[in-house]
Image (tube, rainbow, N blue to C red):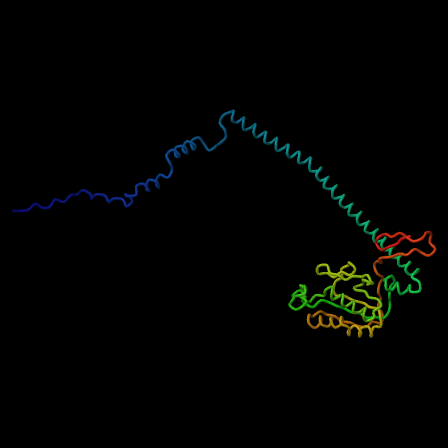
Length: 310
């Protein structure tokens, strides 16, 4: 018995499912990222044109009025600024002129003060020379009222090289922030040593010293009679040059200066000079005054400051 051949279907096989069939929500989001309502609004705006100018006559008039008002405000502000600018500049110039005038007046007063001080000092020197009696020359010398010229010594003292580096030792522990710098107490000892060695008159960097002079410190600066001096410090002393130099080096103050040279690098040199010239003291301070003999009246009036005036 013959068998029927198998029937082969000619229909196409069923389609394979999409790989993202299970992710329909994500697929929908990716394919339709814009909401339908937004899409419709964008389509209407595109159909109406891209112009944003108001369409009605009232809206156009309102926009025009707003622009006119803004232009008026800007114009008025600019006009006010233009008007006020010269006034401000004039006030500023007045202030500048006033400051310059006051500065010039202060400078003039300072010059007058210096002139009066010089005149007072000169009259004091003349009175000291005239009424000093038999010891007038000696008194004038000690008071610094006269210029001194004669043989003497020149002592030059300078800071150590690289003095800003500082260091240890007794100078720093005693309050010295920099061991290689010359301090006011160093200059005090040098000057006292010269007086002790027989100096007749001394000047430091051109500042004449008297019995009332002071050497002090103001920060890192050395002040001689309230006037700053800077290194190198040149000390001139009138006296027998060779003997004075030798005597100073033998004193305790001379040995102190040698220790500063050896231990701290401070530079110092002393030399005898055939002639040194010392200026007069910048000012004289009168502590007491006595009435002249034969003056009218008796006694005087005590001012309470150590001065008696007739």
